[in-house]
Length: 310
Image 1 (cartoon, helix red, strand yellow):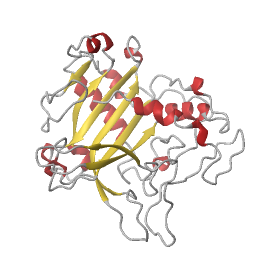
Image 2: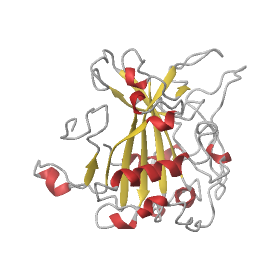
Image 3: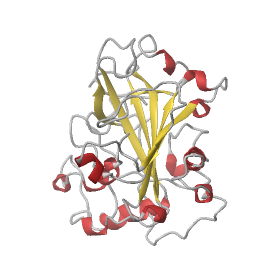
Image 4: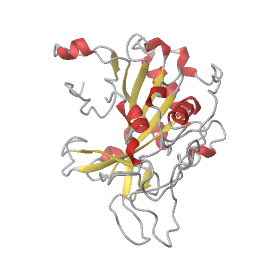
């Protein structure tokens, strides 16, 4: 399980990049470039990523409790933790499944937003879906049939309350203010994690959502490599976790055997959630407790630091 550091990383990454990549920004204007490590080649007719950056200028009001269904469940209660996670997943999916998150700014239920300035390195935003490079999966990490190391690429989204915070941090693009990177309650963020691993090596990914990604610096207008959805991460700023981190982080994994539905999202199985860092127990090399792990999941892969496939 990750601890969600990717949330703040996407906000505060490389303030020194302002003014490069051929972009020109006027102080006070929010107009961030849709730049990529490799731009679309001339003649490209496929999809092209567009940064969702119309950040709210005032803090959006809370959505009705009926929309924030996770508030009905106690994430610290093992019997309710999976219901909490499912409610967050449903919130992220609503209005986004019609085009498989192709343009979250056009969601008619609620808009979602990206963090800017993730395009400046070799693992920066590829031009088709805006994915960035993550740590690769080592041999055997995705299952016993995985015989080669495979790359992982990800893209994340924030709801309006999170988008407001991003806009406040970058209100003056020439002088970002990290002191404003304090997310309000009921901020929700979610992230796709795709892998280049083929089904022959990771058979439980059969039928998963597939995206093309410009991840190999290819030339020409032909097809790019196919990636398959491996994991879906969620994070919620929940006041009930204020005694620890203030956040609840959760992870789902795709499993072919989880459903007979043709819809990829109905195959997403919760891995678990966490609401604390368990610093004292980690320092003592003891089992962490501020978490819930789904022991009924089909693919029991490695869970992270000092953990096994429980």
